[in-house]
Length: 253
Image (tube, rainbow, N blue to C red; front, side):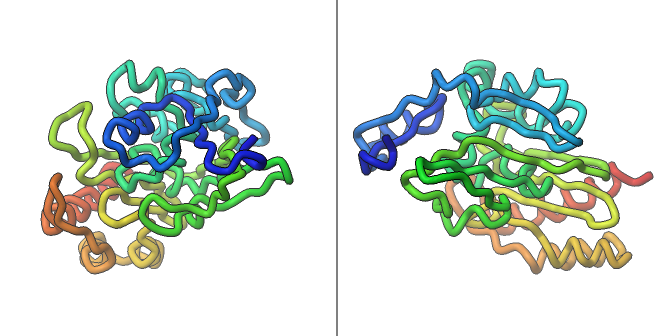
């Protein structure tokens, strides 16, 4: 249907899409309901690779023994997305497709080196999550493709997640960070750029044995947040640096 009917908009839990419809910012007017596609809800593990179907809801992610075992920072992020109503309807694939730089699950997927599985009538392909977004709310997904799953390799280090918003719950992130501490530290940040970003210079500094003070200076120079209605660039930079320090302290052996 996506191949043969250009302009058809896939919809899942609609927690973001309906907002766009109400605000009149959605270009499409014809929709493809994916909710009945139960096979896309499966969450499995194979040889320590976590496989999450794109239609898995946040509630299903929170309850999954595979996710709790292999990617606990995704469970933590899912718990902080909206309230129970949003968690029961919102899907991981929808969060990826919506492409908001404030998406709470997205830094987790970036830090975990996840792979996005895309499928069309012509075939299937895999894209590294760190290469999926091309700009603000833009990605490499073609109009005839569906996001069908995520593949997440085994994480060998300590996992960490923090979200900073106006309130403790049900708030859009001002800054959100996910990180993994092992021989190759990985740090991903949301709400500080047009897309979710990794901090490769900061990661390299930490991997080389630099002090946390030096890594904090590198991170402060590496990110380029903006002022908007939710926060200021200076606040976001300061919070991001503080979160880096907290991550390093919390995961110290």
